[in-house]
Amino acid sequence: MNQDQPEYKALEYPEIARRIKKSEYAEALKLAKKYGLTRLAR
Image 1: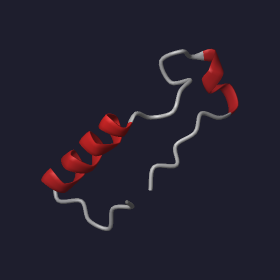
Image 2: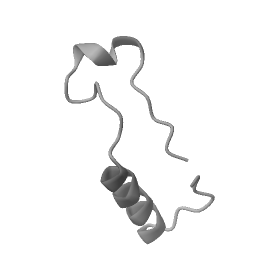
Image 3: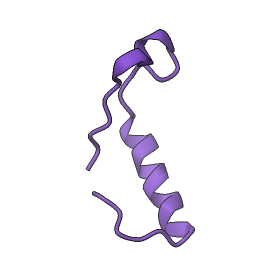
Image 4: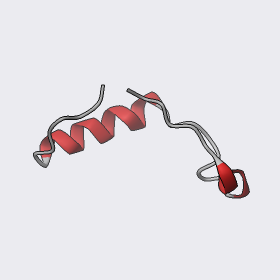
C-alpha cells in the first residue's frame, strides 16, 4: 500500500519533498522480508 505523500515541512528538504518511487518501495519490502518483518502492507 504505497501511500507515502510529503507533508508539513517536507517541501523545505528537496531530498524528501517527493513521493517514493516504485523501485524504492519494492526494495523496502524486499529488505523487510529479508529481516523477518511480517504483516507488511501491499
